[in-house]
Image (cartoon, rainbow, N blue to C red):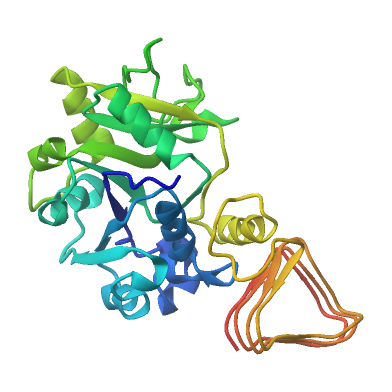
Amino acid sequence: MTSELAVDAVVLVGGKGTRLRPLTLSAPKPMLPTAGVPFLTHLLSRIRAAGIRHVVLGTSYQAEVFERYFGDGGALGLELEYVVENEPLDTGGAIRNVYDHLRAEHAVIFNGDILSGADLGALVRAHHDASADVTLHLQRVDDPSRFGSVPTDPDGRVTAFLEKTPNPPTDQINAGCYVFRRSVIESIPAGRRVSVERETFPGLLAAGAHVHGFVDASYWLDVGTPEAFVRGSADLVRGLAPTSALPGPTGEALVLDGAKVMADAEVSGGSTIGAGTEIAAGASVAGSVLFDGVTVEAGAVIEDSVIGAG
């Protein structure tokens, strides 16, 4: 898309990433090296590719790390602003917390730990065409019982928000991406924890607001666990997950500048080999993420793993 979308983007990156420890003790989850760049870079590249320019980052844990790395966003063709949460506000509270920084009538809200291939332009168009108050990206999944499910009527209006249940009535789940009308954000209570799933969305339905569903079956992954983090990175390298921030061509491996891979070592499965990393003869690395400065000895085998810096 070349035309600029008249919406703001809000990316929520305040979580501590406890499921990804010990990786997140050194860096916030969205800043972990993923396919050669911090995870958040891939999402920001998709926001820019969709024609959205103004992005507000809602931060709390290690907030300064984001601003130090991304600055004003100019290098990515974006205009970035940062809003720090002093205490955890949950998703709804975090959205309300950035309200004063919004400029457009509508804002697309992203959870900072989701890797998604959804068409953002189509999502925003669906929101406008339906004149919705809120539009949710709903992902079709094979096993919806692991998530809360979100049924819609034939016109695409959301009819309920159901908690996890063994036999959900629909395969549509909340994919962690929303378009909000600005007035709806203003109506969220300020300065306290608010859950969008338990409070905001059910409250809107009860009040007769138009909550719309944008149903999609493209690539989608929550990278909150070490297993999912490794898979997401490999999927980006292999071109299965969309990004325009990959520092090299897609393929079986991404070898960053200054890394040395001996001729008879094998690197496959979408592995990323960090800068200054050395892989000795006869070693095999498959589907893994090796951070900078890793040494892999001759004959070693690494599969579906994360190896930290040094």
